[in-house]
Length: 149
Image (tube, rainbow, N blue to C red):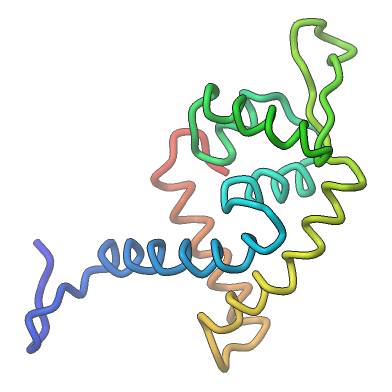
């Protein structure tokens, strides 16, 4: 049961994280839309940048969507020239997806705006404090996830 404060508002961590997710998603949409991206596309491109080549199934796990939804997004991003698909040399049925130069460029257009939103979320925090928060949030995701991140 979530306790209420004197204003009768929910104060549980799950509630606050949910509210943050909702607000952050809107802010990120505003950041990436001018570049022609959706938030899931920005997330997917960021995952490719961080992890290199991935299969569609691996991408789906990392961006928390179904393989079918990930496949539709991959087709769209490939059509825009942001990613390319090539057969895995060790397994012919697996297709590896990687960022193109255009994909790197579109990410670069959005990164500074996304970073501004991140800084706005936690004004006055030091790099060390943000690193600790990052580690705590990553640990929370791992603790509640079957696949981890």
